[in-house]
Length: 479
Image (cartoon, rainbow, N blue to C red; front, side, top):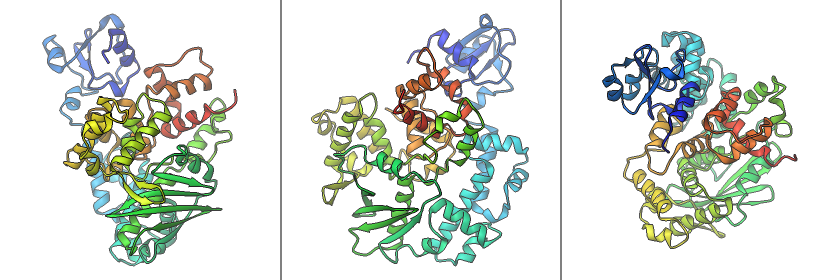
């Protein structure tokens, strides 16, 4: 989209981070050039000039701003980002060296307020939540390697077994002992947190009654999966505050396959996204509190893996839901693996990469949408785009990588980061449904555009992903 001078001026005054890299702002009175997101005091409109590149700004006699450091951005170097990357790598190598969030602050060499802001922006987590996540992840690796529960707890930095069990169960739905036992059978049970909305999960995964990838039958979700080279059914049966999980189709369970099944189950349930912080934030404001009425406990169910969400994101662009479901089915039928009982496992990138564009265009895909799906699959299959483990990356880094992929725009990337990777503070700017929901919730007399949507969503930070899903859900509320 070509932006007008007025568009760029609006984004500059809104300090729009998403416009960084799209244009450069020159301030004629001070002789500097800035990123659109620069926090410096804004000049009068008549003193602003816009440029496409740094060279253009320099040719006009301007120098880089010392506050937003645009040259660092264009050189892909950000000293704060480098500091946070280094700190995160240290935590992952030696989690036991960091007793608490205060230890992170001490190791970073910056203040607690700045570290919190950096973690919130780049990881969408508080420092304490980031440390807890990495500790549990390290403990899972230790348990998978055969270490005892006590060894895994202390190696991950937990000072007591009770704290270890509490954090581990909150993140995985299992006790450490149950996790260590995965693979001894084809079944496991996940404990659901208080207030868990089973109805939301079943409704989300059962939206397409003709789906060949999953099926909802009463209180059970059945999902077709590939566990390694084995096509299986993953059954999730909801029984009160427990989900009974069973894998059908394995000759032998095996620890690695059952850990993969557990990971898929946790994603499908949306267990990683605890809504309590968001609900406390919204409840404190009378103008925002109505958003969660009747929807407390709402979580964001994810797809079984990020690649499945990426395909859904592409096929769902600019089409209605029934047609998007039909296109998703086409991909599944052409490249997915049958698992029995009419279901298929979602096709791998390698399988989709083998398709020709004509395979899809012959079945109602546009030429461009066919190219986006197949070319992205080939990019992943060839190693040019890595999705596995990307949920542990910084959100800002991942967003930049995804925006470089042909066929993925700002809306697609934000949606993918919410449902495919579980990032907590994304806004699907430009989404028609979100615009309609904001219009209705705030009683506006117009549909907000991109910059205004960002402004309206700002009070929900750092939980804007969940706010987005609540707003989408609110469209079904009675007027």
